Image (tube, rainbow, N blue to C red; front, side):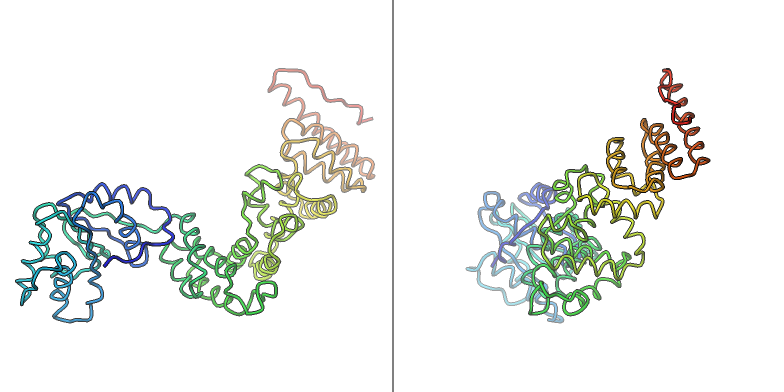
Length: 424
């Protein structure tokens, strides 16, 4: 009797084609992988495509269920194989007769026998003749004869899709185990998110979720010991799934390029951008939990400031707050997502800073990340520093602007166009 079709069946396009190519009449093939990776699902998903190739049917025997029959495992497995392939055949009285019967059953037509986790004695008894075929589902170390096709864990994107589909019917501990089987840390983080999103939470629901307790907390505790990522990464992943958000969606809504996507993820979870996306109300507590338990909270805040500066992502009040954070940190990297090579963006945000000292520092930062417009930023900074009462810095910025413009002119083999009126 065949197991039920896997629902859903995700990915495995290359492995499907490879296995279909190997499973020809007369072939003996082994699909090799650790338990839980998907050997049974892949083999079962292929059965409909093999109907014409093996018109006498597909027999499926799980020899693993006989593992506890010490001394009689091979006998029980061979009996099950003969019964599955030729139910009308009278059963032999001993192991030798049943071995012969199995070889006859495999040789007298075009049938495929799928044998999951057989013992070595059974494998030795199966000798193919004719146009029958054998597919063995084996663990590493179980070395059957014939072609072998290793099956590796699903890639992260496919594994996450599979987890998202399966998680509603699984307890948190099973989700964690499935994440491990499907491919490791990235999937484990997605598993946590799926567990939260699909209701592994206190009875009052996600709207009142305490993200640091209950079933979600147990999942985190189960995941963290074998992940090198800090625990805040798990909460961040959970918040993304609960909020039904991803970097690409956030970037599209904000109208920015892909380079800002990762920054926008944080901004979408912890800022006004998340409200624009109508994220689930439980996403914010989870994201805040990530920040609360972060081992590198200043770095996270820096990332949020970067995200806030992405052109068009936030309103004026949020942008001004992010500007001030950037100026306090003094990092040109914070300004990068805002500037994106645009002098107009710098000038617009300059108007939000009424203090000449802040304006001067803002222009200093802009000059570090702008390319062709750097001389203009430095010249404007010179004016701002003089208005702020610092003539020495003003003169220094003007010299820097002149030097930069001259270098650019030499590189372009064109005369400099920078004015020097601001030095007077």
